[in-house]
Image (cartoon, rainbow, N blue to C red; front, top):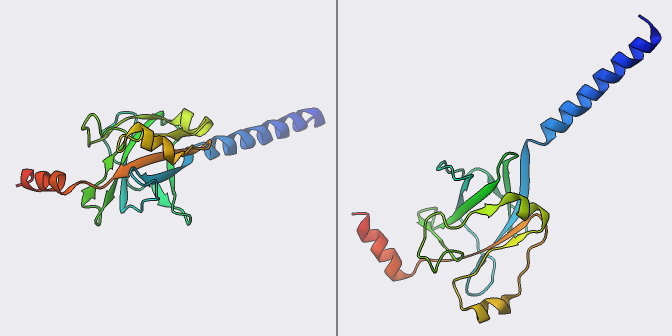
Length: 167
């Protein structure tokens, strides 16, 4: 084999390997979720997350892992464009009310968030659990790669309605 041809072949193999490892590394998108109480702004510890992407009905609870600082790491497929989620408490038996959709009384699967925006600038979800003036006092802003989300526990009335509707 001619030395120049051998060099080109070796270079081609090297480029293919480098491209292959780059594509393998790009199979997931990861960012941070900070879950806060809508009334106090304090960090909330949850039992589980129910994550959905791209208007698909499939729920992925295994994509979220807690970090040591109380935030959560969410790993999505690279192809994910939109996401919505809910958090659970009481051993995953009860679902928090998402404060981004409280006004609409939409307790299941609230708003959809753009993954590219979360990664590039960060997103702080609306806090409809308090009046706008009170929400402004919390002064919480997301960093790139971070989603800040507000939730609240169900009230006793909401929980009793749910308990009786299950029967």
